[in-house]
Length: 467
Image (tube, rainbow, N blue to C red; front, side):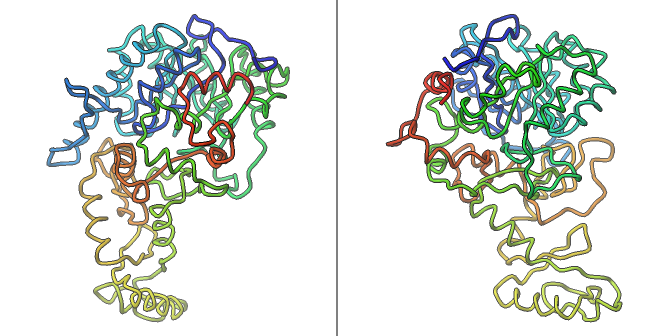
């Protein structure tokens, strides 16, 4: 047992302060989460477009038949509730009553509140807590209170937690079971990087977590309420000075990346194999997500294509001015595209390379794509099923008039399609592959030598040694 590590009381049970990260679309499911709980930790079922199963146990792929976005959005909510309930029930059975089961949702996913209500209503007594981030989930405490579960907001700063506490959480203080600090420079998936923070200048998490604890103390929250360190956690020996540290209070640790490479992990074999090949720097913190948030993913050909697409971008005006003196004569139809001479020359060069189609963005720019790419982009935008509350790629909004009012942005992509595809066996190079920035350590860690893939129990046992 690693020095200083002790069980905590969570959900009425003694559990290890080890939390499984609830990773996005089908990257964490009942098998991994139930096994994590059975090993004595806190398993986290991802309830983001979660998989459901047919009577034979095969995954029911989420196919949409609605003719309008609103109709498809209703289908998505139904899929989300049914899949989430199925995942929680199966995880609960696997856990055998040991450990604890949390669920994870993204506040900015389409229909988040309705999906949460639907899952919690049908899984009473099985869920210990609800983890929620990707936005400012003010109503999380109110929803948790209705179903008698605890809540764990995900924040990346003390300032964000203070805002949530003052506006809502102070009214349901007794059900706050932990606060998850998700480091914006280290965690995989979507990150809470603010406009005041530099994506290229990572900050040490210790003072940020210390400041979060100070905010919690100001609010009267006891030190026994854990802060869960999420992002960049590989082994406990590297966090030894965080354990039993009076400055920080009770600390728990979330493992998101390491559980991807276990026997119970539901991700396809190609994804697991790729994890063993990554080098340091292969995970990119980028801003191509249609959510508008920064996110971290493997810099595979899919992501490199998005980088290159945005690089093939020039600004334009509808009338000439001192800078925009030349009419764009490639990629567009009409005379209302005035560009600089330098940008005109660049555009002609891209057209000569086969990028002959210019697509308008919401920012008075155009990006150049191939004739083969345009129909794919346009079809993905047209097929939108409203998986986000606001989507820059399709200009969808999940309430009021169902549109953001902005032009759909071809610099982004359909995140539902990309994540469903990669989780269900489509080529990893052609889809989005989320990972934390420590993923390169699979290749270097002797625990995984000779292609060894542990069970969740073996992984938890290994973590408990400090390695």
